[in-house]
Length: 183
Image (tube, rainbow, N blue to C red; front, side, top):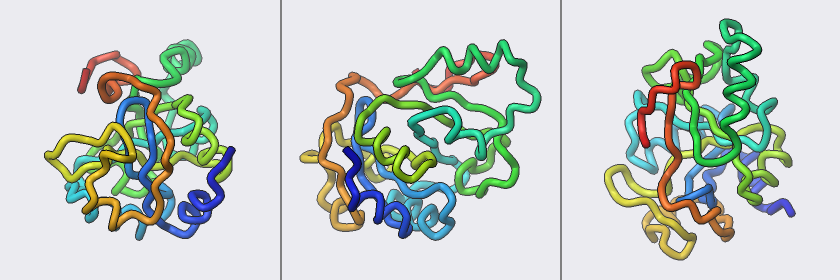
């Protein structure tokens, strides 16, 4: 079931705290530049680091990525790594906000089966930005109850669901080479 309040907040440029596979994330509409700027300021995250997009299905990611140089076999391999636990770095569509990709020519993307995120992404028909729900340098929260009160005061909505129970944040890999950036 979709949290209608979260959908409205998302569509109106708000910041949402929500469960992912292992930790709580902070996110917003990837197409809303003001929301992206606010999210980065709230998290105290440098814009050059880029952000992750979390989606319920691959089609939601297509406007943000460039697969023109990727073979059908490689695309199939990318899809077979999902859902959950693996964030893949792929060429970005150069028309997306530089706040999404930071200083990189690529963008990090992931499909999830976390029910709250799936419902939200389906309701808005696009991915949600995903960065851990913590101030840069502090440990991320693994439940809505353990969210930093300073963050809770600044977000517009907290989805009080449960993570999928993974014991660590997603592994980040190069979608083409398989090189691990974070394991």
